[in-house]
Amino acid sequence: MATRNEINQQIAGNAWTSSYPYENLLRLCDDFGHRFGGSDREHRASEFLQSKMTEYGLRNVHLDRFPMYSWSRGSCFLAMTEPVERSFSAISMPYTGSGSYEAEVVDVGEGEAADFAEIGDAARGKIVLTDAETNRPGESKSHRTDKFQRAVEAGAIACIFINQNPGMLHISGALYAQKPGGPNSSDHEAAIPGIGISYEAGATIRRLAQRGTPSVRIRVENSTFRSHSSNVVGDIPGGELANEMILLGGHYDGHDISQGASDNAAGAVTALEVGRLLSPFAGQLKRTIRIVCFGCEEIGLLGSWQSSRGFAGNQPDGNLRLMVNLDGAGRGQGGQEVVSATADPVLQRFFEQVAKSLNLKFVSSSSL
Ligand SMILES: [Zn+2]
Image (cartoon, rainbow, N blue to C red; front, side, top):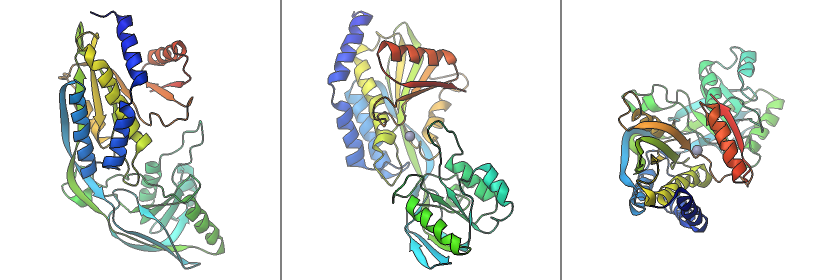
């Protein structure tokens, strides 16, 4: 049996010379494309990842399938009717339903709680205009979905999100279902439509609004339908503490408007690669390692919820000791990697020591 040091050397050597993660990344992005939760593309990607886990010698490889409601993008039309007539390019945010809406626009700026408090009842029956996300480095401001919820509670009939990133790209991001778990497809749609526009379009609307109260017309047509998704699961059985488990995963689904390379095909193929590197050492590692490529992260962490059910109560899947999630892995330009350790400050110190011993630069934080 190889010593621990020899195992480490073999794994490190294999990792440094492997081109598998990049090849698998290309397959996920170029062959399957966006991999939106519950779509055909996501299903095909799950089968691909399953076949790779089997090929790499992981054990107990299977798809952990769960039902969900998926969404398909149709048309989206946005036009200003006052004080100037002109149309803007816009897209529906996932889970927006269908319909036509026309009303005055109420601009809530960054859309923080204080901004909504300031306008009082002024958004009732109107269309809210808000920045999507305005986090600057080191800041933690409201999430897009928090702003959307505020718009719903303020009685708005629709919400327009402005991309915070300069340029002509639209912003996207799933919106909450109005009655999650309801029996009808419409229960799984957002309470009001949300549409995304570019930074430039947002700046134009705000400029024109200085000439008089703006009104806009929105027409959206999308469909929400019953589907399913799967987590892709494979194990490397442990040795002396085989009943204890370390879970390493990353989501393989993405937004429907891009191929989701960095968020998060890169994380999924990295988890898969760890499975490939460790599988020859089944029985020689202390604990069982479980690799999970999660489905439906972008539309409400559905795959993670499904996975966590296996560890609830009497823990039929073993004694889970640590979960490492890779999201946005590889997105940094070097030196921007972040390890966010939750639940236990001991973890933060552990990762800081790992960084030091490997001469890596990454930020470590601990939050609960
Ligand atoms: Zn992600």
